[in-house]
Image (cartoon, rainbow, N blue to C red; front, side, top):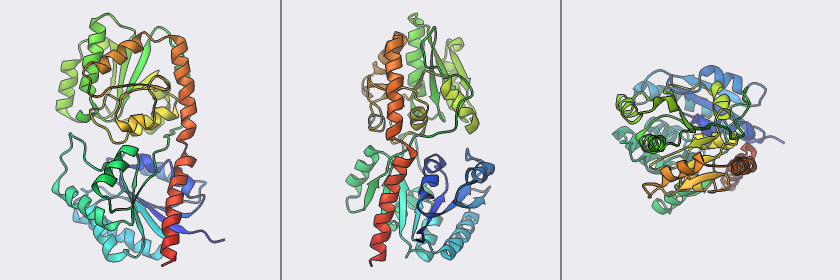
Length: 376
């Protein structure tokens, strides 16, 4: 039986996509269009290696110019020219760029478009340029269906756009391979906490520093805090210098982290911490799920959707000023038995967010859309 052909087009947000494309390729003739800028964490060789031994057809389009450049328009024109040759049953993409939307409407509008949306509203610290605002506005008029990755964003989307078709697909755990070091799955003299991801104001790293420094001042010195992720902002670096008074309790790696380093980084810590002021989705959370790390996080719905306080995580009231401090204080006194129960529950959690389970949500949606299209 001939399989249906779909196009899966990427420009950014590769973390969400590399967890499902191999599963989708088991069902569909999958053409993966990857538009990659030098700032993206996955290099060209990664994609070439990723598709080896699979039935995925990779269409790789590296570029080194701004996304607002007219050169980007030409790049998308080449993509859609290739897409028309393929004659897919469906196009899926998270790309909301104006050029993508415009060329889709001009050249491929008869092919159903499914649009993934990570953030229905921009984060509190983000001021989007006019180009992006216009792009997002047009994106809300072009797709057959809109895909969301967390319950909170799906509910917000339905509230703001009740007449638009939308589906929740969720996010799977993110597996970067096996660690080469022994996991920290026992509590000894030190408890190692990991903050992983790009440092941005909405992620609340300054709140974490305040709570952590207070614990040290009060004599609770068995905690160690590691930060791994790009900074690239002098103001953030200044805040780090001002907030951190006891540098011997920190391990700072404010730089790009190669994907090959991720397994050992997560295996070398007991907990992952996400002190976010606001949150819609969290890719690093799904890495923690994969490597079995309990998390410390506010009770924003994207964390509550995945984690349960006292079972596989330590969630706190995001409106309570002292809550993060209190959770860290509790953590400094956690027993071996309490920790091992949490680790066991984290291993159980992983099966709920497997790649196969999340990919099946995509497959169910794609089938519903293509069947409806065929029936017209």
